[in-house]
Length: 224
Length: 234
Image (cartoon, rainbow over all chains, first blue to last red; front, side, top):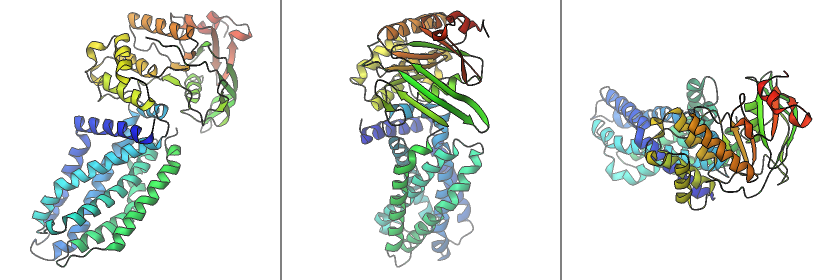
């Protein structure tokens, strides 16, 4: 059974179970919405302030929401020991990671696309002229968050203080992604928008390095 | 329902140690199960039965020692012997239906003609009429039936069962005993943990009792199966 067909079967399972329960999507959408709405009252939407602080606020909200989402990622597999069933069934355990990180990226992007128009309206920041570039940044940033987060979720799910461990490991590790994503988003939302290739390059390299590490060492993260 | 195992495979545990922190679950355990044997594993709670089964399933790596599957002569860490495993937990998804669970695992295992195999197994475990119900709506016994069906999806050459009759009613237990009998007769190697004498434990061609992570009685060494299962000589 090839890696791709196993990944697609597992991705189908991830999507089906989430769309049935809607646990993760509801939590993340509500969390990001609350952050965006609450902070919109602290900025003057007509000033340049919102352009300066908006991107950082947006990515911080995405990051915290992602940590909520990622917490459940491997924890769900513990309930009935389904992770053991998956390990027994797949030839390459990387398929398990690949499906989970693809699902996490998809859910995160879905949440971001749902809330981007609200951010644009509340903070008076037009996103349509740079939408294509913005989608690229959201994709690369969300992918980075998902790759590192999925790996750490596998580690923390087997630990005793799992609820505390994931954010403790995740937030420092993702600080570079947060900084780069914020910088690129800020440049795109500038009154004179430009593309920060340095930031985009950094995000692409981060994703590639962590994906390779996950491919090489992922199997050990699943062991009891 | 039971198709013959494609080939017989034995299990060889050599000097297996398994420690959890300072606690030994298994101590220098050496055991050879020949291909086609049906072994009943008895022992008190915490004697190491579940750990031994999880090591045999390659879900747990031993702290020391090696695991071999003699017919393939490959290290357990690298080979994927066709192993069916029924654990304490059901190992199926509550948010999927019985059919979706079996289809998912059949696809992952590369089972040929997935739909036909799933239909046959659902029929055999008596869940055809509930195939589209979410597993979370099932009773413990029904979940156990799905768990057993999942373990039998691929023609297993080694079947590992951790108290497989848990939650099954007498009808279910009789069905399981019939299924195991057919698998045993087809040459499948079976290692199952059991408590006391039952229709299922009576299928065993060999009995082994563990205590504190060591083999303390074996029918191959002259003990009777009944004494092993009932702790009569303990």
